[in-house]
Image (cartoon, rainbow, N blue to C red; front, side):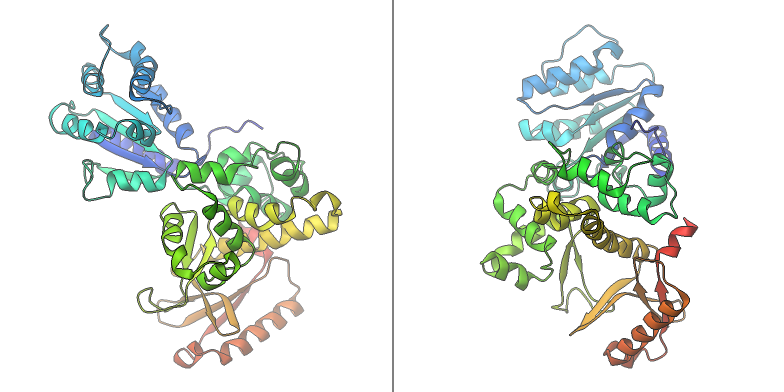
Length: 422
């Protein structure tokens, strides 16, 4: 399904402000999040220069960029170096925008390019000319612009992260009812990534979407984890094996190491790489410091990747033998984890809490200091069921160590009715 350009109001506002100021703007975000759509939607009406880099040797890349922008350059000269190309781009008489998308590919072929750009920014860039450098690799973009030793460190006026879009935006774009649990079941498979939304049809069930994206013949997302890891420069079988282990329920490093048959210390570097790439997220119990606690859980951050390793990979062979009830059950179990994230995201300071055999979906603190302890259920509860869940929640809280410090906590139960207000 073709989707009209939607949302991104805040990002467009930032781009407009950057165009007025000039200088360097860095745009980054994970693969398929919609960076290219955003940039081309914004640049084209302004007559800006845009080129999406290709993988190749320096000479081919330079020629590709030049061919993409030469129709708008006011010269017949052909650049032989990056320095010459930036000089030509700066010769335009009107205030201009030059955007190089997939910038890390250019640097991979020519590591001197950031230094060339640094010199141009310092000595050759015309006033009110905006250079936009964009890329999908979170790790590489961080190395290029946030590493103190990098030539372009602290050179950008702003680093703009293009983040996945919301559930509400998904429903508006795909013409779905946000109060319908089936809509959220579909969102749990594609997350906030607009490229994946193109496969969503209003009359389609969640099972049909799963089969088109994952379980059918030559499915679109079959190789997606490998593509994302490749973009981030994380190679080999170990990253996939580690994500398989986490997707199948091992959240603690000790559990991961045991299942993979290795020592826990051997996973430290790989875990950090996956964190730096925003593929994994690390959780600490509410009110405990990352510096002092040894309680650490890892989970796959993106809903689509989580589905791939939690549902698709373990069940890909048996899926065709399952009946509709079994398939729906697997989708519902996955959607429950995404719904918990959805509820928790409304409170930036909220976090899970666990100790021993006790676990609470999330805990947050009100302004006056009182805690709110929340239980999330991915179904619509009756009044009686809600009261029973809240009673168990209170009872479990009284057994926890944290309740001694916060005896006057409040309790809430969130169910699928929160979708009614989206």
